[in-house]
Image 1: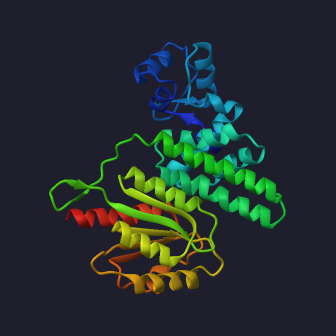
Image 2: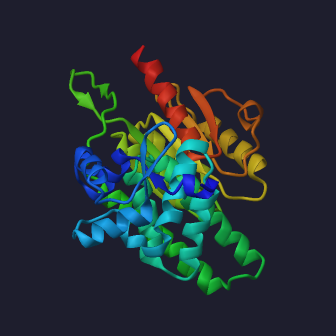
Length: 319
């Protein structure tokens, strides 16, 4: 069997989850010869996606992959490569191809499906959404797409982030909260926005979503925010976290200048953690940028890296 087909096969448990039945039903249908399947050398049943979809159609069973039609095997194999090999290239190429067609429903459905199958929002954002945004920018700079198409595709991605935020607004994700002086639980506050001159706020939007999932009270400032305004808002709201998203050619010098401004406004009575992020930051940026007087300065190139940085501070607070 070809290697590609290896990632197009399902275990009985995976097949059961995709068509919303118990695994014992899948095993029984295989045993009775009703479901086409293969048996590995180790005696395990494997079901090809096409065979599962055909079975589901004949029995009027819904399947999470059905909406992808003939691309279902490619979607599943892309997901499995991401999960088992950390190889997200196929998922990105599938999604970007649909966005270029445009097949908007399929692009949005791909992201939703990956999250339904266990990808965190950070993983889905870094693997598909962030890479899509960078590719849109690259295609515009290389005259592959015109400015109108660039705006159109970008707004589709913005709509997707908005949809995800709305769909997860009611989810209760446990996260330790700070205690107010009177003993009641006080929400942790975070200020999020983009550096002055940066009108591309999609990365900041993603961070907003991640923090809201973790029960932060987010004051979102959006694009093109002067450094002095970040400082003023942190003072006003006594925020424990300040996140700034960068998209600029001279990223390190811009970040250093903003950190210098924030340092001058820093109030020891209102301490906070500072996180600066952007895909183009060098890997040694954390060591290069000045740290004091903040509680800590974290530099992230991906939302996964930021999530790990946040987790580190959560554990430190709980110790």
